[in-house]
Amino acid sequence: MRSRFINRLAFSVLVMLGVSAITFLLMFLAGDPAALLASEDATAAEVEAIRKAYGFDRPIVVQYLDWLWHAVQGDLGVSYQSRRPALELILHALPNTLLLIACALALSVSTGVIVGVLAATFRGSRFDRLVITGSVFVQSLPSFWLGIVMILIFSATLRLLPTSGFRGPSYLILPAVTLATFQVGTFARMVRSSMLEVLDSDFVRTARAKGASAGSIVFGHALPNAALPIITVVGLELGGLYGGAVVTETVFGWPGVNTLALSAITSRDMPVIQAFVLVVGILVVITNLVIDMLYTILDPRTRGAR
Image 1 (cartoon, one colour):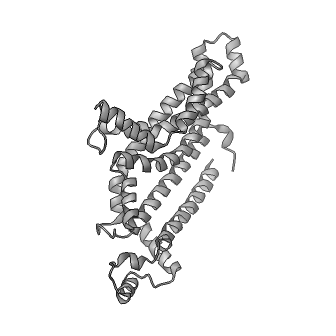
Image 2: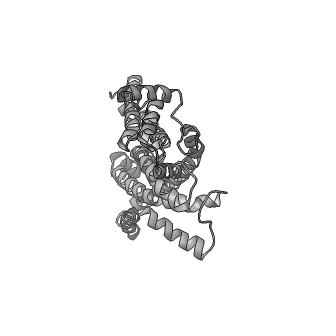
Image 3: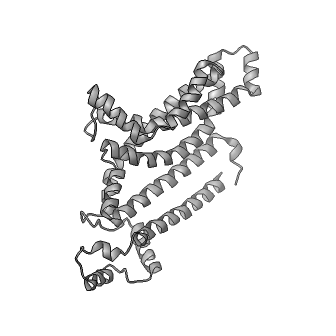
């Protein structure tokens, strides 16, 4: 198990280096960074002076190594717009995004598990068919459309919940539900499929033969064994939640890191964009590493794998 952890950690470090390289290249893919810093009426001499002042005239490999050295020390540059450290801006807005993602994940997992277990328990029933159809339907709903519809219903018409911003728990409900809706369908189908496989296994049939109650079979025998694939899906869907939060934060005016990144993209604030991509990339890599290690701990069969 220790060897597996070391291998996964080494692989994660390589992935982070790849993310850092892509993040750095974003500046040059977007155009001449010196021209982005210069004003619209800047002369060629002024642009060249900026290029030399910021070291953009050096070889790109040298620039990357210098940027990586500062990034390791927590220096990801200064925002072109606010003149504040880019990492500081990202870390200030990141907790709001993580709160939104955590609430959406908790809502989607809990709802998906309950619905999936019930669908598997009553296999072939109307409820089971409704779950199969409903999960496909909710996965086909665009997040921006669902968010706007929820605002029209619960904010503009019923006046039950606020429309945008974040000044209390009530502001979290609509964006969290919008972000979680797509994932509910994924988890419900995954739990149903996993539960059906376990319910058909030999040890469940043995428990039934011994007279175990239906509740004991479902929650005491089947669900714990069906939980391992669910953990894997949670790790995969977290990446989708990070991406889906971009649209959700925009629709609801949520003061998160994705809103900050969109503003930086509009103004071509490359240090902030670089910091956003790097921080989110590291979060996804760390999440996958934790999920992989958790899976290894919970499933003894994988402990000898390399």
